[in-house]
Length: 113
Length: 114
Image (cartoon, rainbow over all chains, first blue to last red; front, side, top):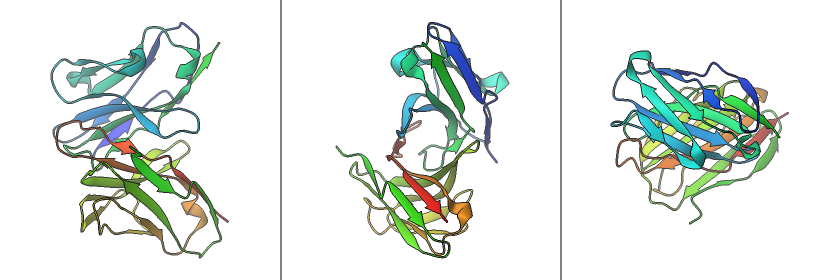
């Protein structure tokens, strides 16, 4: 069975600090990998996704993620965070059509102005 | 486009009551899913559908029923609500037409069972 681990439950950073959120997965088969963000009171929105090709993926709002197959990891990074990045971040894996995503437990990110 | 629309946004039920959470999408997506979100547990899949007339169970299906009579709608039924079903429920849809296709989520339904 597939699983996703996010080891950072709550991260607190000051504005302009660099961010890296960890994500490790276990999945039998072709992997689709995602990072979703949930701003306070809102629904989940896609930040970025990966299936194949360049293992360094760029998403919206300056976020990027690196797929490292040997480590089963898909860590999310941002060089300089802003107060508006305060949100909860979810890593997810899914099959071809994404009818059944498996999510990690989420990382709550708080940015201090 | 409205995207994925869920109703109601908030609901309070008494133990044993039944209700239906509505989900509709206007993107002609074949795949639709229901998740529940609980603190510290992320989102967990309840039921999903890969097309009209086809549904299957996810990770936590007990206490919930679904049906998919049309491409647009995917209602979630609670037959006899229990306090353990207090949660935030999200409906999602995706086209399923390619690798890493995006799943679009509704705004969520916050359900409290007392």
